[in-house]
Image (cartoon, rainbow, N blue to C red; front, side, top):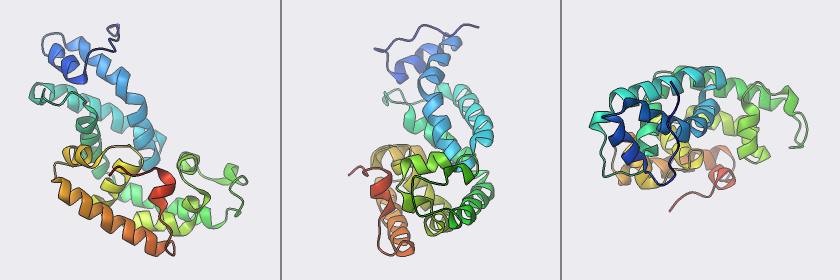
Length: 207
């Protein structure tokens, strides 16, 4: 089936509403958001697992589209929230991946421009977003050591680029909970990095 013509003036909510009567229109939502969602999930779980998680995310979203809140024009928080639930089923795999990258990072040279070929698949994605300190063992181990909820908040903001309110909507928690989780995560990361704040390197956090 051919995807419908993209309409840049049609909001995500409008696409979803139209898909209630014309299910094929939902493909437009996939065309808009699948690539960045795949990059985000890939950074957390690796590209191979990201293929399945993203596919399951859009399948779940399609089946749940009749319950979508049409007052929310941007569907990204909804989609990332579904993906977060999917990632939650692979928490142990994510932690194992971070620890494996940490072990590899220990052997990497201090020069951020050297040695990338030695990193396992997917680590260069992390390196492209963070300063050289981010690929070192202490940062990766600190990420692995965060609680699932704190890690979700930190990475939805730092890697997915969601605001506090969007992150709250994605996870179904109050904005105050997002702020407290983020503050706790940043404190633990700073402690692990000797006072350096990795989130400022990854991306300027939304206020």
